[in-house]
Image 1: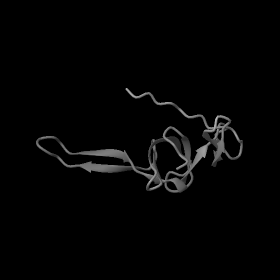
Image 2 (image 1 turned 45 degrees about the vertical axis):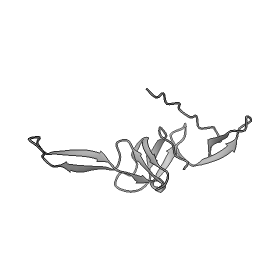
Image 3 (image 1 turned 135 degrees about the horizontal axis):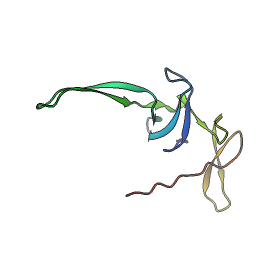
Image 4 (image 1 turned 30 degrees about the horizontal axis):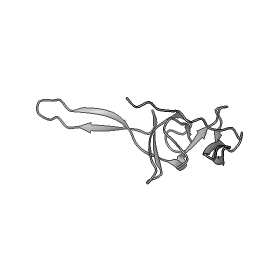
Length: 108
């Protein structure tokens, strides 16, 4: 899967076409991603044990074919791979050829 958590993407098809957001969750097996603020639906919560029912907006998965990664110029782009000098494989933008920087997440 070429998309990673934290990538900034543009929705290219569907009801949210033209919206941008960051990837929150990735499912490589199904080739789907959850994008922040996009593809929202209402989930109805039943009242249980004295707690009132509720309607909650949740973000659903999108197919990776429906999103395009945004490069440093905020233009839709594709992702390719190159082998770096140290032997590691890095992601690069196809149009500009620049390396996509990986954001390190600190686990608390």
